[in-house]
Amino acid sequence: MPEFSMTIGGQQVPIKETFEVFNPATGELVALCPNASTEDLDAAVAAAKKAFPAWSSMPDAERQAACAALAGKLEEEAENIAHTLTLEQGKPLGGLGSRFELGAAQAWTGYTAGLSMPVKVLQDDDEAHIELHRKPIGVVGSITPWNWPVMIAIWHIVPALRAGNTVVIKPSPYTSLSTLQAVKAMNEILPPGVLNVVSSDDKLANIGAAMAAHPDIQKIVFTGSCGTGEKIMQTAANTMKRLTLEMGGNDAGIVLPDCDPKAIAEGLFWGAFINIGQTCACMKRLYVHDSIHDQVCEELVNFAKNIPMGNGLDENNILGPINNQMQFDKVASLVADAAKHGKVWLGGKPGEGLFFPITIISDLPADAPLIVEEQFGPALPVIRYTDIEDAIAAANSSDNGLGGSVWSNDIVKAKEIASRMECGSVWINKHGAIQPNAPFGGVKRSSLGVEFGEEGLLENTTIQVVFS
Ligand code: NAD
Image (tube, rainbow, N blue to C red):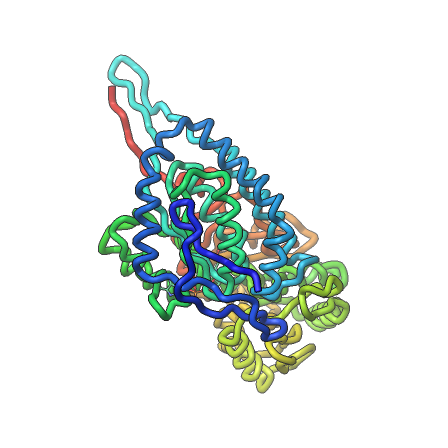
């Protein structure tokens, strides 16, 4: 069995306590993962704190070059990490799976390394010379989820490092191994202590909660559920930490009557089912005009039937299992309830183990839990509408506001409707497409702050205004 260890202060930490990580496709043990104590966390934070003065005062071009080199390191290790990711997360190696995730991690690293934060002159005249400088914050604590663990780790780590901070990352207990591997590889480039990782089952000690309370962590960047984000915000208040919180979504898609159902089926399918729906910005509710509602459901079913699901190590499979039992039970319960009240077009019943078939259900009451709650799995409610105003109001009725989409051949009309959707990103004729140069973050209870691009980078800084 392969060994995985935590990296603290540039060193592999001897393994003491461990917890088991299982393959969701087979139920087999993948590896024993180091289980951090609060002393391990303290050591990681102390290492990051010690590394901060040298890393933050390094000439910017040198720090930029080190960050850029991380992309090359990830490329070298991509196949190994992708293999581990498939084993612990379940997503297939191919398709929009592990190799795709590693490719995205490299792309985000390369782009973010290339960003810079020039001094801004606010005033330069006889009265005053005023400059706005951007400074790193200190030690950044990163807490990540299990759905896109490597890519999200990179979203947290690279902008923090690029801005001159040092980092302690804590991955999800379900998918710690790929992060341990990636951090170890990145430490071949970075000075000791600049990037540290602690893995935890959240039981021996709740390391995430301890990070939110830690006096020597100056900022938390978190991706995960709304409930955990709220707890972090409450705890972090005591030390006035900076926060970037990316949380849940319940994205709506609105299909206008001028669409060709067959032509949009593939885009709708991947918008809803990439990573079998375990994606924050997946389409989780689909509003379709009554005139084409049934054809859209039929075309989604036709498309879904040709997408193979199974063990991700088999190169033929394009979709994998749900990652963990808790999430599986949540999806199963939402679908069981919906199947009682609506029309099941496809799926509707759990498969073997943690496999859950693609499920499409229509004609549910507006307050059905499958519509109102974030399912985060392979089940899509399709909702019939006749008046576009009703569809927009229903789409906006959620407490979340991460993403949304409008589907139409009339781009002007689609953009007008898009502008009325209460969400941080809105797409026309696609859903969930993100890229490193476009800031990403939600409104309402979905997010606090943004990631990506210049705006995301600046979240890793404080300002200093210099008057001379
Ligand atoms: P989660 O909130 O259960 O766990 C996320 C992380 O928080 C894990 O590392 C976990 O160990 C840690 N954690 C647990 N308790 C903690 C505490 N008290 N304090 C600090 N940290 C703690 O979320 P999850 O189940 O891993 O991920 C699924 C959720 O993440 C979904 O709601 C999804 O929408 C959301 N998500 C959002 C985005 C986004 O960018 N908005 C991206 C991916 C996932």
